[in-house]
Length: 216
Length: 216
DNA sequence: TAGAAATAACTGACCAGTCAGTTATTTTCA
DNA sequence: TGAAAATAACTGACTGGTCAGTTATTTCTA
Image (cartoon, rainbow over all chains, first blue to last red; front, side, top):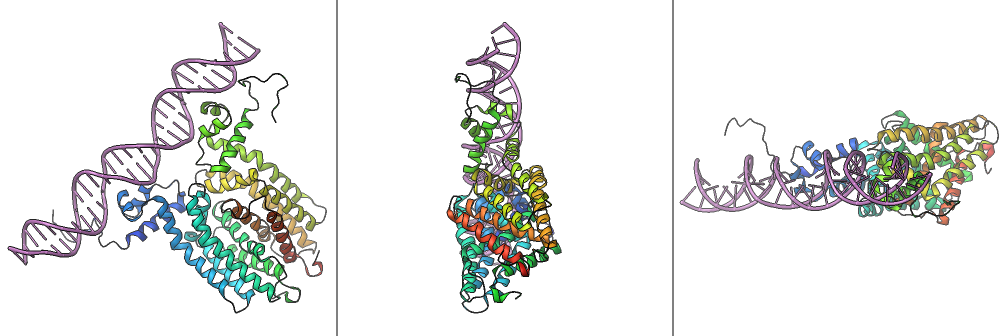
């Protein structure tokens, strides 16, 4: 059977790229059909592999989802957390870039799909949810809370409860994500998405700003 | 709740109350374990029936979920829509009661669980999602938008985009629901839930209020 | 006794995860 | 060098279990 060497190789060896290819395929399908409705065999097919091979790289379907979280969400969460740790600089400006950061992430379908899946499968994978809470939610909210607290201390913001106000910041972003992706209102690449962020910032800044600081 | 005027038979035939009992059981289990993880047989057992009997009342598991939406969410959506239709009265006050209405609904676990399920199962039941969008989302957002638009026209609110601002109103409520129910942060009966609503109103009103109207 | 109400056993489809075996690539050493 | 040995990558049929929905049968009531 040794024929022309120009044939497309059936096997691709040295497969350091494989895990990522599996994740790419999985994400495509999770976005299109959801987590539960996607069979591991579908993922394998799309990655150009057999089902068994997938299990060489990931011990379970859940592990694939977990790896996706690590790859696409964690970096963003880390950036957000870094913004919150900044002890210096203008809280108002930092808040602005933080919202931009989250907004950009949520505008990216391949990023935004993950939280949706987590929410959806929450019941089935409590342990995954727990790790998401620790690694993403608490860090993100923590950063936001710190930022707002500092703004209040500096007199830039009115004396709101920082922890609660933090939810006012992320809430509309999450809501927009859900409306856009689940109920197909306002696609992500819509210019309205950008305008929504602006509107959010506008109302929020006005709502937070201390008396003397309006129209910043 | 269910009381028979005559004696209590061991087996209850002629069951006009049955459909509702099935819904009650289903909701209990959906809340506790999620939609997918709840078997129809579990629902039947809890309602004191056999699995087959459930299918005398509902043609499918999806139909049970659909009936739950009709029973628990639609009345609230209708109330919200009614508030939006009011051509008279103070938009600011109306907005306040509207938020209270939604907030109360979301504080009720047996109500709040439904949207969560819809979001979660969105991929599997596109047609159910579509009907939810039409009957709940669009009516709710429409009412809010109308209210805000009127506030802007009356000069009570700054000239924000009413449609976008509406998402700023519901966003934090949704976010709070998710954080509370999925990530087990701030249980619904927590006094913090009430304080969160207050904080939301506070920031929102300040953010929306026109120059002369602050501290309303 | 008719027939409505309900049951319990059943069917068929699905799918995550396994594993014995196959094929490509690399290493060994004559 | 080149062929055999070793190993890494991969395959796909199979298993075991789950569960929505159906049906043959029984039980209760009028």
